[in-house]
Image 1 (cartoon, rainbow, N blue to C red):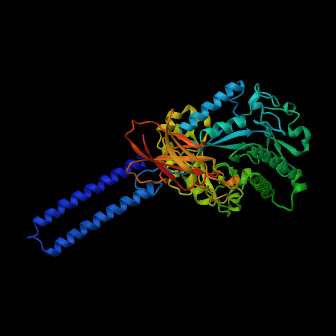
Image 2 (image 1 turned 90 degrees about the vertical axis):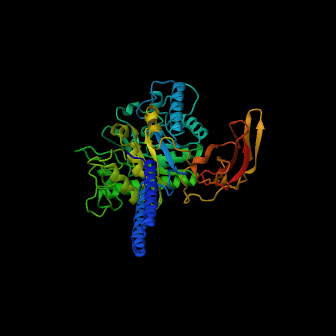
Image 3 (image 1 turned 30 degrees about the vertical axis):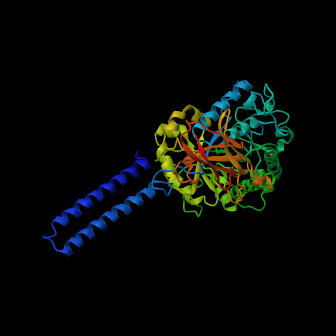
Length: 543
């Protein structure tokens, strides 16, 4: 595949060649002007200039179509969501000691950092259980092998991940499954006494080997929001995340057992499908309000199944696909949630390959970009499948052509660890550091400028020091700093992510000695919780 920078380079070479031909042609006509009238010379030169102008316009147009940004050469975005899901339901941590689990988590985070990831979705509540210290639900059997059994050492996986992610400049989003209460393969007799089913079995339904909270009950909505609020209140998470499990994936010939609930709590709906969608709508709306009422800077988002609705001419927006649907099968009206502002981002799981007959990635990425506006849109990428079909670079090129798409997320973290060299070899694998996309509907006020920025030679080497700016409230508190580096003579432009030297939560930044003969300008800015960026403070440095 021809990458954007190589194509742009060839186009520039073509333009230079055309200009050289123009000069040769001009010289020729100058020598032969005795044989031609001035009118003919002017006419032919005019035609040549028009031809070259057309070539130039075509070249520029091509670059605008291929490159995702306005510059004529590749420039990585300064703000981009680069996430990864870190799941536990595959049992990857079972049978390990706590120290072994910590090592595995650290290995995955190190790989994600090397791949440029800046946000992690860590699964902390897979089935009404907990990978954190909960006052309401038992320890997860995915952690210790037995529900309710505490880890063999005194550690809290969620707190461990928060600290580990923040130290690497990553966000940590707590990922919960709202309705699932027991996974396949478990029996109700294996549920711990803290599990909510043991106290209120009447609030649950069973389907396809799963135990689920009945989505129609207001008591269940209140309880799920209580759990979410508890996590957000007690932990310094950056977001709360739910995935594609709303009403369960349907099984042919098996109806979800909610006829009694529909008869009792139908709220006047004549259509059970519309009623089911409304049940999920109410949960999403209530969850959003619960999260933001506790901490208004914590992001709330959803990663739905990759098809909203198959186009059928029924008046519901649909894509040119023929697969399972959010709207009709999982009863998740995700476009409504965006329209109402209940979510801060959507992250559809577009795991199919380019050209898939039932669900073509190329068609779906275009469809979501056109239909999910108003909030951030990120794209879920299946790394293993993309490598298997050798279309990873093409997928990212299609994604980057859509200005409404502001990031991506890897399924899944351990796949990145196992295929890190392939990720780094890909067209997007060695990008500069990136800040998170802005969310002005949550907060748009930037923190103050850092104070007293100085460069000092210390026993440990050259170091930049500064003072944190004052702040009035938690929303405005600086929690991270961005350090930029510019060579002597370079224009100081902090919008160019290639100049980001690093990010830190400290008010100092160590530099690498270079022999005392190289001059730089270093710039430091402050970021608040939503990564609004302060004005720049700069200092000249000789290394």
